[in-house]
Image 1 (tube, rainbow, N blue to C red):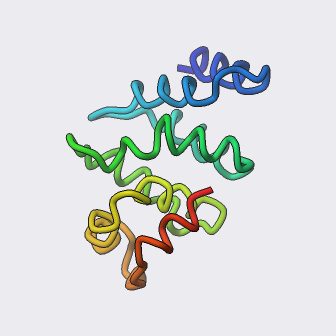
Image 2: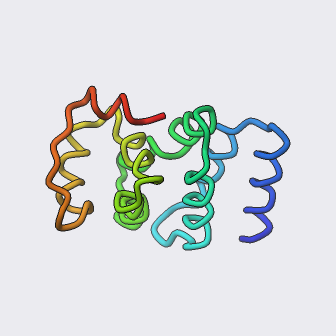
Length: 127
């Protein structure tokens, strides 16, 4: 797994196709995702600029709430909800799915996640 993460890092640093990199990352997620992959995703997301955030949204994040939904991926995504620098990932994943966002907020957002957001709020906070 470290070798694959190293390749992704190299491609991002060298100005490769960021959307393609995150599409490849999405293929590594599944019923038993590697904690190491999710740690890498969160590390990249903490410092991502606008272009990289858009690439992450298109190549990876938007796929997580889609069918077939995997609880493990949803749980890993929602870990970002409690960290301000990662919250954008959750908004990005759901920007076209406000109804799923509200339902998953109740399930995965934690005991203090009672905020309501409109679809305009979701779109405005993604990148």
